[in-house]
Length: 626
Image (cartoon, rainbow, N blue to C red; front, side, top):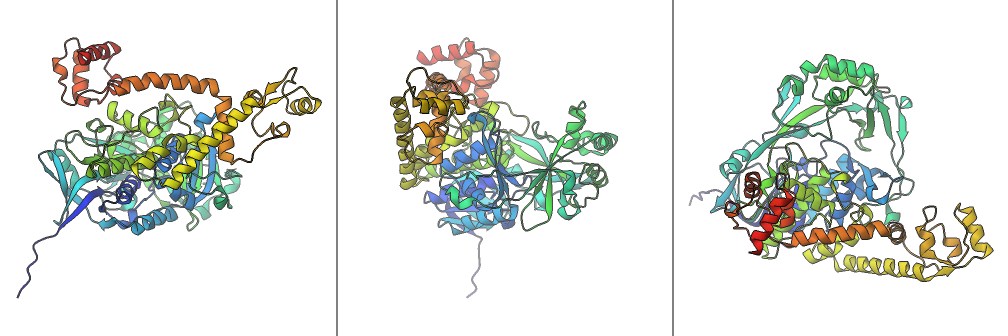
């Protein structure tokens, strides 16, 4: 008897669309919470792909990676396994802006993450293009892939990155592909528009990759990693990652470079009007830099290895969409690149993404229940920003399926909270990039204390083990005990004490003081006073670091904690979902329009919406009280 097939229908708890940095975190979070999860990717070779810079972390981005790890995410663990150089940036400045940055071996990073996904018990990887969302009565029910197969699910997470209707531009040459020549996703945008989702068109770019054998490193400044490597993940043993590191290099553009660029601006798709999308303000192409900063006669260029298995070198700081012949001419004016050969041309990439004001702070769509979104698809830039959103979107998709309360990270809890709050409450007409200056409580939100801030939340969610959580509780206890010991341990005016203080270049004692007071002195720290601390316990470096920071910045920390109290009061004043702002007399027209558009969940969120004034907030408070 003939057996006729009638199409594929499969059932999962969660569908994740896209397997970049956001999709990997989302899929792992769902699977690790025990839900049957399928993650779709246009190519299994693009899992955790690094199509642009070969590094993880950096200023403020390092904070995000640490917070991802504290919540139980994977990015920090993965870069600890695959880095080839590591450096703590801004180490000469205050601890609020210290940021860890590691050069990755791109191939190893992607393969290691892929293996992590493949080993996860409840996770299925599927190479296919998702072309349609199945939505009934404003509730997502699943997805349809290009072959016609249907995958039903209780929640869907969209992490499409830069693939939707993507096209790459190199001068006059346009290819309709995603990054690195991978297939673009050309169908899902129509389905989203049909569901009423407002779409944006954004642009980003990447520099050329050079054959490292053709570069003259003697004309560049070598850039070394840290002598003592600090891991990203709080669960990585620091001793296990001390290894020989590769060199990076610094060189500069010059006036000849700029002249070539200026003479060929008419051939740049950016300036010829070919590019429709808006590019990132804080990561401009070299054409933009030369035009916008015409007074600068040089720009920094970093030459960074793509990995230890290849000769390719990344030319950081020189992303471009100029034609190939112009690229070669301008690159060859840079010291050390005079005889360079290009392996991969620089290009700009345009793609579809959403207006993120359509999302709640949980990253669920306001208009479609159980549909979540994370990553560059939300109008952000960067691997780290993507991974952070993917983790939160994945966690909340899983919690929704499990019937548990969804989570949010607020601005006083983490950089992740600042990132998501900025995306969902502010008008973003360009790719959003995280910066330390965006965090108003940055002294509290340091990269060194991310575990103390967020491990408990990760444990309550179910992504952090009991052992890891108990380790954080012990760490808290040891920090408090040591600070208290220093407060109650006094040293006198003996010659031994004063000779040590003279040697350290600080004022001698005329009366007894506590060790706490000595650590607080600008010239001293916990380690420096060891010689006069007779009962000093054996403590880990990370505990000593916290003791130092908490003592030295005690006054500033207390001041910010007081500010957070006021912030928390506004955040705790929730706004009913069904409120009709048109009914509120006294609200200005602009405020009414903005509040109706953004539908804030709290008074705090409403106060951060552009166009909503303090007077409008007072009117809203009175209305809610009545």
